[in-house]
Structure formats: structure tokens, C-alpha cells
Amino acid sequence: MAVVQYLLAWIFASVLGLIAVVKRRSNNPRASPEETRSSVTVSNAECRSAHDDVDVIIVGAGVAGSALAHTLGKDGRRVHVIERDLTEPDRIVGELLQPGGYLKLIELGLEDCVEKIDAQRVFGYALFKDGKNTRLSYPLEKFHSDVSGRSFHNGRFIQRMREKAATLPNVQLEQGTVTSLLEEKGTIKGVQYKTKTGQEMTAYAPLTIVCDGCFSNLRRSLCDPKVDVPSCFVGLVLENCDLPHANHGHVILADPSPILFYQISSTEVRCLVDVPGQKVPSISNGEMAKYLKTVVASQIPPQIYDAFIAAVDKGNIRTMPNRSMPAAPYPTPGALLMGDAFNMRHPLTGGGMTVALSDIVVLRDLLRPLRTLNDAPTLSKYLESFYTLRKPVASTINTLAGALYKVFSSSPDQARKEMRQACFDYLSLGGVFSMGPISLLSGLNPRPLSLVTHFFAVAVYGVGRLLLPFPSPKRVWIGARLISSASGIIYPIIKAEGVRQMFFPATVPAYYRTPVSSEKMTKKADGRN
Image (cartoon, rainbow, N blue to C red; front, side):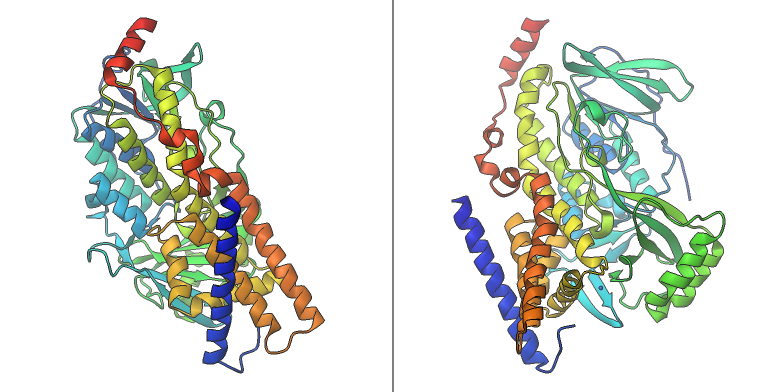
């Protein structure tokens, strides 16, 4: 059955790619084959150590932790959130929420958290390459007029969610640094942490959920963290300038790798320059400013050139490593990983918050039937279904991010150059050729088979461009390498995500796990005590 599905996907991708070639040539028959910090007010509740006092401990109050605290608190769970720093975060990523993520916000009752923070609506992307550009709009026709992407200051968004979570009487937010998980006979019983004043404390709960972000120091005992750092972002803020396409994210297919622009307020535009590798030019000795002016500036749209130079001269340049890490959990009684502590992808496509919010919806729906969480081993076995149920959405967004980053980055290899150009031209065709990929990117239609179909349709389209009107041995060879290169890009990512869980989750036994009745769970827990 699996072989038949793959074969059908390949045939459909080939047909789609060939149609794209025909359309391009009919449209252009002579074309030759050439992208203010603040503090949350919370009650300083005393840490309780009895299991009966708290149902869930959440480590971290970023996007995932804050949204999860409000969601579980609204369902009646008693939640204790421990966050290292409750002042407003100041980050250069996590600033663009895709429409699919906004729909999850609505589902969680958190859509008002993008209000009163000067958030900007986003209706799609504009793609730039070699002086040409194309606009890709989100397919929002079937949704309410309020549904779109949102871009904002990350810290303002997080503060709004923290404040909303803190309004629930059964949610406690406390500033403190969790130093370790408390384990007893293979079960996580709670956490040890230091309070804001430095006092050593312990907190206990039947379930501890670790959401302490990309630099997590707790995940090593809960998963196999294979972290890759393919590049770094260099962040700038451009002031009082208009982007060429209003309310759209801008992606420049620059050399050596993409450059992003998007509004984060009514007067500010975020610029993220991707620098491959783990080392970036020094900011302190002026090498970074020189790099931005001599290498990057000439490749950005002329409409924002002056604002870009002014931002470089202003000197508020920030850097951050771009991390990717497939989810590889160790199912552990009493504990669960979520957010960037659990799973990361390249931030090029802005899919991180969508994955986190989608995961929260899955977890909420799994926990809702349970009145008690006290039987840790039974709960852990039941929650193994979480890792399977999240896979189709999360893996599609993760795979798209990793594949697009490699395709959009420049390469001396002729086959990779052809793939990059083919991707730009394919998306420029419009219709189904842009609608499918942008539906994946937006999180509105995160289907793995659709992703693979369009990815190889781009490859087939690229081969068609090479072979028409007259193939030559050299072009045939480049075309063969293009297909090989495309496979070499996407297959390792899919393998890391898990082919079975991604494409055939219904064949995984955990997919069918049903909750143990509350009475049985209580009896089991009492029996062990």
C-alpha cells in the first residue's frame, strides 16, 4: 500500500511539473532555462510540595508555556508555571505567526493576545530573485475576514499570553530557575528550582511539562537531542520605511542565503540576514557592518536600501543561531517535552509557533477526558499517542522549512542552481503551482503527501525547462543530477522526522491509545501508594 501511494504521488508530481513547463512555455515561448520591556504582575504564590495541590508543572513561560498554562488552566487543571525571567523578552525570532497558527490561537481562545501590541496583518509573501519578484497570497477566501498571518514584537505577544494565563485563579506564575527534574524509580515527580531571591525549592506534580526553549538544559534526559545549526540570523530593525508589497513577508533569494523582511509594528520592519555556518562576522570590530554594506545591501530591493543602510549605521545589530532538531522523545512517566525544547526547524518559514500551538491543541484534547493525572506510568503510555498524532502537521512544517532553506540558498553546483531557479519560476506561475506550496507554508493545509508532490513537481519542472526545446547530453546530465539533488535534500529530513509516523500515522499502535477511566487510574495510583 505504501509503495502504491508513493508511486501515485510521484506520478502526480511528474504530471504537475510537466503541466508547469507547458504553461510557462505557452506564456513565454522564447524564455531560456535560467529568490518597551515590562514586567508581568503575578501573585508570588508559595511553592506547594503535595501532589494534590498542583496537577501540572510547566517549566518556561514562552509562547508554548504561556499558551499551555492558559489552556490547561481553562480546563480546570491546577497549573504551576516556573519561568526564569518574567520581564518582557527581547528576541529577533518568533515574530511571525502563520494563518494556520492564528487559527490555533482562536481554537485555544487566545486570539486577543495579538491585540493591543501593534501587530500587523500578513496576507502572504513576496519572493525576489535577480531583479524579478512575484507575490504569493495566502488562500484565505474560505475563512473569516479576521484570519490572516500576524507579525509583531515577540516579547509583547508573550507578555499578553502570560497576563492572560495569570488571570486564571488556578494558574500560578512564579519567577525561578529550574535546575533539575526530580526523579524517583524512573518517574518524574517534579522539579528543583531556585526562586528569584536564590532560595532552593522543590515543587511536585503528577505531570511536569518542559517548555524551556531552544537552549533547554532539561531535555537531555527526556529526548535524544540531535541539534543542528545550519546558519545564523543577523537581525536589524528598519524604521519608517514601506516594503514594496504591503502586509507581505519579503524573501530575497540572495547570495549566499536568503534575506527576510517583514513588519513587526506600524513603524518598524524586521530584517533577518541569514549567514550560513555557525560563525558570523564580528559586530564589535565593525566586520559585521562592513559585510552588511558590501555583500548584503546591493541585493535588497532599492525601495528599502536607504533604510537598511541607516539601520546598519545605527548599530543595533543582533545575532542568533538557527537551530533544527527533530523530535526524538524518550517516553518518560511524569514528564513531557513541548515547544523548542522538544522540536525545532529552520525559522525561514516562520512555522515554529504554529507547530507549538498545534501541539497544545493535540495535548489538550488528549488530557480532557482524564479527571486525574496521578497514575504516571499509565498516563505516559496513553500520551505516547501525542507523539504520533502531532506528526503529520509538525513534520510537514519541519520538512518544508529544512527543504526550502536548502533550495533557497545559493550553491556553485549547476543542478542546485537550476533547482533554485525552477522553484522561483514554478511559484511565479500562480494558480495551483503557488496555491499548494503557500497553503503548506501558511499551515492551512499541512499535508505530508502534498509537500512531497509539490517538491518533486518543482524538480520535474526544472528538468522540463532544461530539456525543452532541444535536449543535449549536458542538459540531460544536469537534469538527472537535479532529480538526485532534490531527493538528497528532502529524503534525509523525512527520514529524521520518521516516514511511518509522518505519512502513515494510523499504522502506529499508539495512534489508537484510549484514555484509561479516571476511576481505574485513581485505583492504580492508590495501589502504588
